[in-house]
Image (cartoon, rainbow, N blue to C red; front, side, top):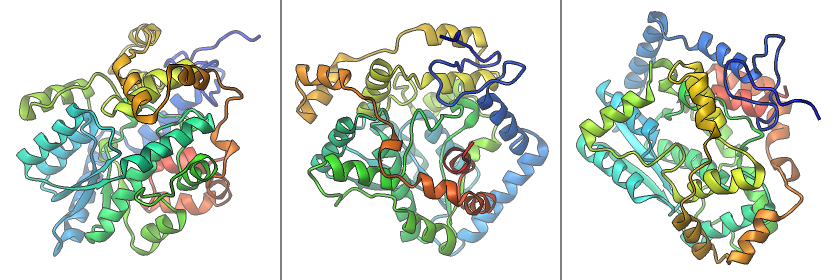
Length: 380
């Protein structure tokens, strides 16, 4: 067995980080990819001017409409901070939320506190809870690690629906590669065909209230409706600790305990299911991002990663109660073999890879996010 290798810059390692490679300097491919992103989105005056021109264009294209842009919100730090900053820039925002019926009370309260004070409208799609719980049970039965994929897909679809309904040409989200890092597709994968494939094989409910993101619809929205996707935090000197402090002072915003913890099922997936069943710790990506951006030292990162993930027994019990899983069944689920990945089910990944050149063009036109092209379309 080869010795475990850890990146000399971040905390990505050869045992637990999917698809990781190291160069002759001992630096991982995710650090090198971040360097490329830093060159594309540098924190300098030229980049700031580019962002200011984007904001001007958003306002120009929003004339005659009620809203300039849509922004996905979860009650978390990143999207909450972005609500504040975009409002400060004078954009008329339509906040968009996909309610999978598993939100924590803290996250829900955070959303309404900020929206009320900033006088921003909210577009929400609430899925039928029995249908959605059945989708979650299907993903558990499929034996893949990314149980929360349906939420990621549904939020993207809900944002497109909100944009089309209101004639909006710009979609914003709160992702930041500097604070969240680059999550390998081997950790989590998400697309609409994947959700359909798993639900068709294991589910008992048809997808009626669930807003799936079909590729044909997505291409229409990108190519014909010309809905552009931008990540404003890529252009900002965004410090997460400072953002939390600002939000708490201005909006009485509450911290919910950690990244991905604003939703109870996401908490179950990220803090219990993935680490204990797959030895998959998403903190690797987040901590690595904070190290690369100078918001945490590598020593602090390694120390934090050595701590066990917190597990709230009440949330585990809630998941069992809602999904009808006994203690014995949960033990069987956690021990079930063989482990599966998205490659064991039908997905759009072969299409994304085959037409990599096409999605590169969409990415360059701001019609598809950079990380979508890098994560889903590139074969290496």
